[in-house]
Amino acid sequence: MTKLRIVLFSAIVGAFVSIIAGFAHADRIVILGIRVPYGLVLSLSICLLTILWLNRQFQTRLAGTVFTVSWVLITLRMAIESGNGDLVFTVTWYSTSYIIAGAVLLSMAAVLPAMRLPDRGQHSLPESQA
Image (tube, rainbow, N blue to C red; front, side, top):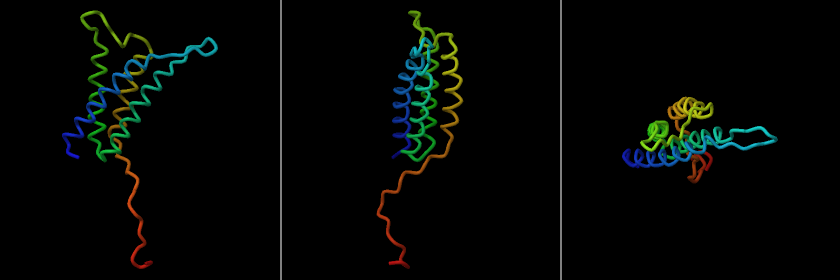
């Protein structure tokens, strides 16, 4: 696959996943009267696993790097108040945690070496054993 296709596919996936994660990070559930912010862990996990999947599928770190850049751009856009006063990332501990932990984790994941794809070819015996 050409580098241009890798960049375009990773950018589109990055934008899509980043928008979903940006809204999902603030989701909470009440268990026994305690608010548990599971959305923070869920959204960071989805982004992290998507980077690892992209790097593995394309066998290059370029895919993860493009995803991270897309995540940063989408996150910055969501953190800036619009003309109508809409703001996705309010000043809360989980929004701040999402931005800081996301930047650190996704940057770390983007530079990891790509995992190898499983060998799906036919395994043949070496010539000395055949």
